[in-house]
Length: 159
Ligand SMILES: [Zn+2]
Image (cartoon, rainbow, N blue to C red; front, side, top):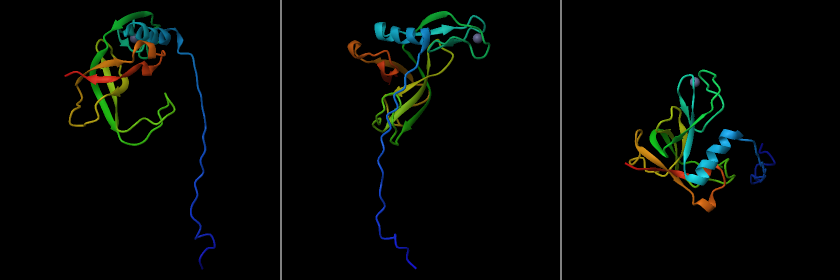
């Protein structure tokens, strides 16, 4: 016996949930974005215990628990350690809007740093991007910078 609801078209329900979120990024996080905004300069921080350099700078070294305070300038370039070319729609949590696809999300070892920095890489052709390739940061124009990770527009391949 056919169910009496079978001939009804399925419906959708639209909901919008604004979720503004703001938190302190601390003195080192603030300094990191100030250096980018004012000088297009990356800074990291060196551990006095194990010598590791972290970007962005942080308060404590994870492996040895030393408190960190030696800021160091780092170049705005490095090498790709991993990447993913993304082809599914995704709401960018940094902007609240869908990032146009495809785009490439990359892990980058900034020269002189021991950890990995992640950001967008401006290459979506899988035949033109490889682990180990050299990349450099491309920044927004000065008057468009907001002290935000997106002040770095993306990284571009330089070799
Ligand atoms: Zn350490």
